[in-house]
Length: 315
Image (cartoon, rainbow, N blue to C red; front, side, top):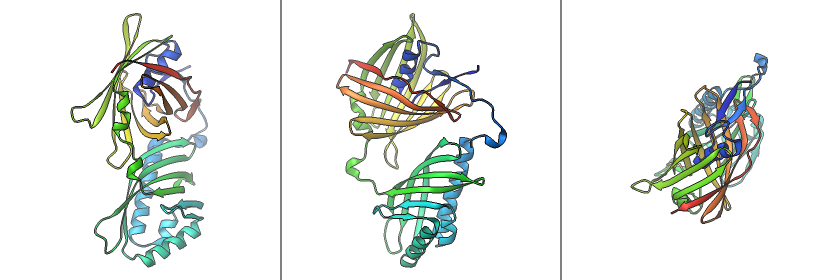
């Protein structure tokens, strides 16, 4: 059976994978390769999804800026749903076309700039996307910026929007790297796979938090890596991960009460596309748990990993 290795979203998670796997794969977790299927049944690849979704997003902006409600609504599924920043819901392609036509009549020459920030393939012919919309109305000095999340589906070889939600971020609830300042310091965790040593530190200007980890077993370093956490200029938090095997990944972070959740996607050296949802729960000022769920490799689901407790060494 072919063996792959899968990177996780946080530096600590990379160590956690080793600790719970008994050292079978340094810093990464072994996973089985996908079984061959008939060509017609193969799931859409992430690169194809990204190109297709960016294409229809650009087409939507072009149709919107031309005030062409019919062309814009054609990029939705028949039962597509749109939830606006005012929480008003419009359901169905025909209703979306009517709503757009009314908007264009009320705001002629309105323009929109839509930027896709991230795309994640979450199933066969299904993908999620996040991004920013900048709407400029005639007679206004500046554009109004909002964020959106979208669920896209592949229909007859064409990506269409099935559900889109748009909202205006509340500055009071926006997360920044300063919200993760409690991570700064030295941490450790132990397990069957060895010992994890993890250090987080601010950069000189306190713009980014950099994490460095090393995993040792029997006195030898078996894996190491670097993670950078920073504010996305368009809003929210993002991180980038690089490990000693050559694997790279990035993640979007959100806060859910006391929990921190990041959705990570990446590529390992052999080209396998990987993803996971990682949940970090602070237990106090000197410890936290990390658990990885919803793991996939080339769309093959993988079991969740058990939580790992990470303990502070010193601040």
